[in-house]
Image (cartoon, rainbow, N blue to C red; front, side, top):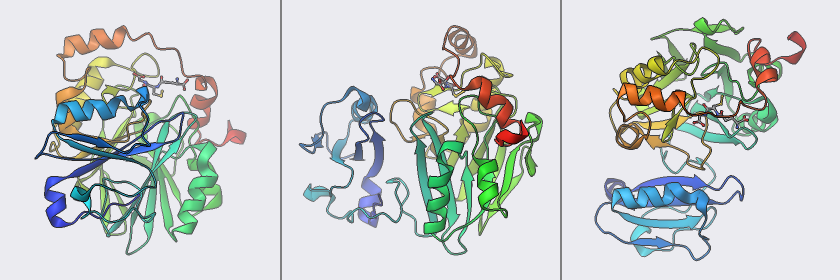
Amino acid sequence: MRLTVTRSCRSTWSARKLFDPSGYSSLVILHGSRHNKAFSSKDVKPNPVFEGYRRIHCLANIDVYAHQYGTTFRNPAVTKCAQPSRRNFHPNVSDDSIIFRQLLDYKSYTYTYLLADAATREAILIDPVIDTVERDYRVVQELGLNLIAAVNTHVHADHITGSGEMKKRLPVCKSMIAAVSQARADVKLKEKDLIKFGQFELEVRSTPGHTNGCLSYVWHDKHMVFTGDALLIRGCGRTDFQEGSPDLLYDSVHQKIFSLPHHFQVFPAHDYTGQTMSTVGEEVKFNPRLRRSKSDFVKIMKNLQLPYPKQIDKALPANMVCGIFDEV
Ligand SMILES: N[C@@H](CCC(=O)N[C@@H](CSS)C(=O)NCC(=O)O)C(=O)O
């Protein structure tokens, strides 16, 4: 969905998309600062999964206009916003110089991000998943993009990376991962490297703690950061396996992500509650783990007692070799 927000609208409103992973329905929320009312389409049913919707509404003390995906905005206050179109799906990104897609794997709730320069058509994928490679390949083809890189934020434990399978379909595509992960890839990344596509570049920041090779990618031009599992929306990656360390994760997030300007948009590798993005400022203020002191954070992380990811035994060895099963 694409919202083209006019200048006067842009200064007052911002948009957020939430979805219900089980029901596959979506809400788009537009919020501004002048009023204190909430509106929602009659189609939008109360649903506990839309916890984030209520939270944003309560915290921001704002107008909320909600509707289901695919319908148009009916409230006259937002008529300056164009009809939804399929050109640029994410409501938070209305920028003709780029193509941006947030793609979801419903099995592991992994987000894969497609980033492209609209002029040159050069594109990269962040965190492709093996189960959705066909879908992502089709999107790349349909949009006429030249996919030059499949970039992993880390060695995932809950799903197998799609970078190896994508390379089979598009040999020009280079796989990338942190050098310290010791996983196989065409390009081994380290702190301060730049990943270039068309006129754009991502800055590589090392954010270990969930794993020792966790990287975050900062798109300074577009005020976005792709945080992998280091920082999740109102959460963070677990630290109880691989080379997990709560001390290290706390420092990584505070030093490398929370130090970014607070309006930067945060795009994580997962969300289990149907939220699609956050901002640095929101996480600094509201993240229930990372807004605490380091010693509190360490205690919280040591007591999470999460079950191990179901695919861990298969995923870890496969991800060390770019997700290609026959090389395991
Ligand atoms: N149930 C899922 C795994 C869920 C999980 O452990 N997620 C990880 C990221 S993938 S290793 C995590 O760090 N979660 C943090 C949290 O607070 O939930 C499965 O079986 O795959």
